Image 1 (cartoon, rainbow, N blue to C red):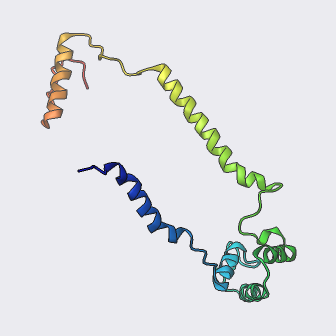
Image 2: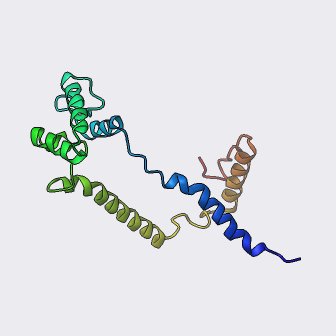
Image 3: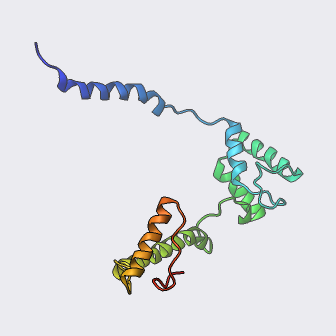
Length: 174
């Protein structure tokens, strides 16, 4: 009897590809309402502070929404409609200003801040690595009695009991 194990991977690939292909090839065009809402989200309300046309309920926003639908019904493209409103109200009507002129600072500023912050963090990590451990390997002790006192105190705290009371003659502890 022949073994066909070498055909398993290609067969699974073909089955998955045919199962997923229809979803990838769907070419449904957005409806007029979806296109209108997309445009409304791309334009800021001229009289409302910080609201898009889509969010705003002002009379002007309602009028602009209606105008957008009329222009889409006439067959105008998204770019033509946006250009119409930019000519009428200026670039301040755009929710995302184009990266041109002074707007480059708005687009590149956050990237520059991230880059500078990353560089500073990198330098800090390097300096910490070069310095090594700042904590001494062993705590300096002046006498065996003081060492015994601190070991007993640490052990007592680890076990949850009260630390020993220092003998005034033996330890210089707290």
